[in-house]
Image (cartoon, rainbow, N blue to C red):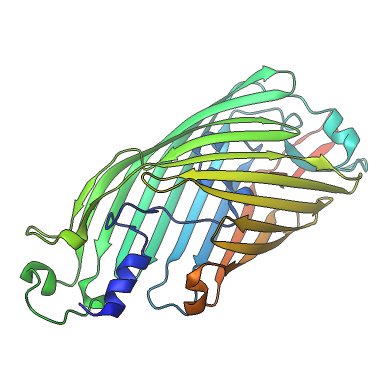
Length: 347
């Protein structure tokens, strides 16, 4: 195998268990759709929340990771269209991000939430396609505080496209050398909890709970054999009201993947009313990112981020691009209070 092919496999970050490294994709804009890393957010909205995302990591690097996902989640029989940490464009002129609006926040009654996640991740010759169904239950702990717990279950299909590998000799197992693709399908589960109010959130989740041994050949090819490991995420954020038109949301994420050291990431997001937002992100010893987004026509939002790598990989790539298109389906309003739901949660 050539050095180029070997680097491609290494840079897949163990996506198929080649090594004990990050096997799940990285998301710069996780703050825009925390549901992708925590099933406990199933049903947190007052509407059906749909997000389509595409990420190209380390552009201009041969075999660099490319990730696309679709998520859909919503509540079941949730009727309190006012009392959630969801922003509204209010018909009587009340500012949906102002102090008065948030002072009236109350926790949502107990309810169920369901969702669906579809993910396709490619990195060189390695790829996987995952699909999960999720469920969560939300309860009010106090007049202004909610707690939810959820889980996801589904399948992941791992693939090795041998046609993208360049073997320098024929001593490699013939079952790999002569194959176009080798596939393995595994059952998988995720789980999480999420504590949220009008001012802050704290989430704890675990992805890829069911460890699987992956062998892409019936014979001994140790470099193509490995084990999937759980990915643990701890997130938290606090909303700071700067004025009636602006707020700031600093947040942190800690990720742990055995046996790697814990990874830390800090974000800060600034938002103007219900229209525009911008933010920056810093990943310890890895990179920095800029983010920007807007909300359109009360039914759609779009956001973009660009990552600049600060590690030694910066020499070999031109940064990473990530875009998210969000759709809001089934907006409703409380006719007695004249509040109209128009957009995503502030988180």
